[in-house]
Picture 1 (tube, rainbow, N blue to C red):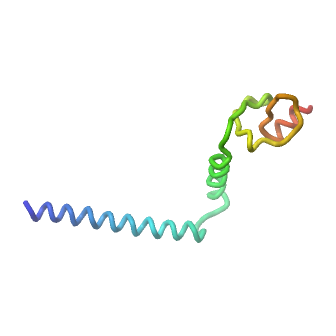
Picture 2 (picture 1 turned 90 degrees about the vertical axis):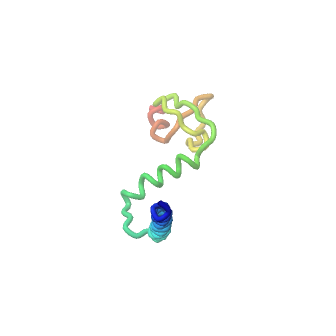
Picture 3 (picture 1 turned 180 degrees about the horizontal axis):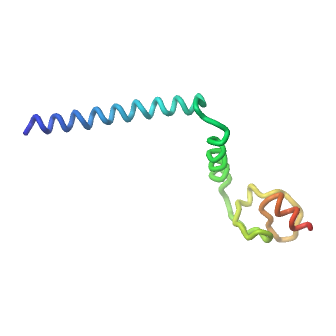
Length: 93
């Protein structure tokens, strides 16, 4: 009985150590940029930009999408909110 408990604890300990080791190696590889391609970096960059933008969300009068006010292009429109340069060109036409 005691031997079984000790084997179980040893197994849990070994699994934990191996997972920590793999985590450290994975972080080192990702920091060095090994094995990454431009297509793999694209979603990470988009995710980081949307998370860091934050702030108040407003609805675009052109496309209806909700976007952070801080990341919107600075244009002179009345009280309307336009989310991107593409929507600005659509609004002006």
